[in-house]
Amino acid sequence: MTTVAPRPLAPSAARRRAVSGTGVGLALAAVSVAHATPAAAEEYQVRQGDTVSHIALRTSSSVAQIVQANNLGSSAFIRAGQTLTIPRETASATTAAPAAQASPAPSGHLVQAGDTVSHLAVRYGTSVAAIVSANGLDSRAMIRIGQTLTIPGTSTSTSTAATTTASTPTTATTATSYRVVAGDTVSRIAARTGTTTAAIVAANGLDSRALIRIGQTLTIPGTSTSTTATTTATLVGNTFAGRTYPAATVSSANQNKATLLQMGVPSTAEMQALVRSTAQSMGVDPALAQAVAFQESGFNHASVSPANAIGTMQVIPTSGEWASDMVGRELNLLDPTDNVVAGVAILRRLVATSPDLSSAIAGYYQGQASVSRNGMFSDTRRYVANVRTLMSRFS
Image 1 (cartoon, rainbow, N blue to C red):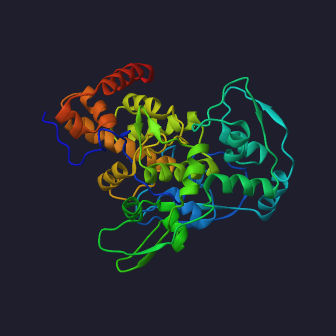
Image 2 (tube, rainbow, N blue to C red):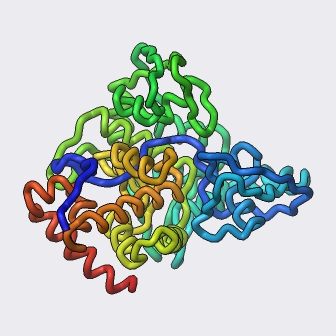
């Protein structure tokens, strides 16, 4: 079969991935939520472009509750025209939550099997960013069994300081204006102007779907040098595998990393289950999808590379746009479900248009056009060998 590259995944010199760069509406499907007693429920008819996470935000429910109430399964797939039951919480359950969070956190935690930083943050009423900062963890927030973690307190001043350090600019350049034209999306405008989707959404008061209209004038926020330097040192560096990435790319990576840490992410086991079920539903070998996800991120959805490869499937924004075109809706790479859909959609296309499986795997890492033009680079050959070995583990 002739190799076809309708659109390259990324430059061969970059950490190449597939994903879309929408940084809003982060209702994380597999994150643990407090159990609340439903007081009432309402019905919602799914519209074109809806996701469960966006519906949860608009209805003040949670993804987990909507999934459970409608028996959606781990992939949380919905279709236009479908009627969903939206559960509501009682006032007493809602009121009880702040009281639990107000309790002071213990000074330390001994890491047990199955622990993740996001789950510990939920358990102790603090944030992922605060635990990462207090313990000097690396950009993947990795912890090990038997490790003793410092759990910071949950006072308002502490939480605010942690958030500011991770994601709030200390100084900002003058904002610019941009007039929306046909075909624009917020993620594409962000990529062209060297900022992030989340920053544009915040600057313009957009809703969780980041909808814009032709002729609309958007404020494009600037990025300060001092903020970039601080965030880079704290979360994501500017080099990978001997390559150094542009400041604008690294700045976007750091903002995406800070957002994921602040919101919390599903556990690695939950992400693995999501990858497996999504691959099955989209007609891709689950062993292949799981092997790629493990090689890319270890099923850690908080992973962001210096090339701004985001999440479990490590998709870069331009490849995310390609995946969005393939599935027919704009994908939010920070959303766990959308991130996996993007990666699996790209794998499906690569398998269909590559001469063999190894070439398809290489295309996910190096870019299909580059593999066709240059053959596999040495690091690509190691990547392919690792993925093929992992496939036997997940078969």
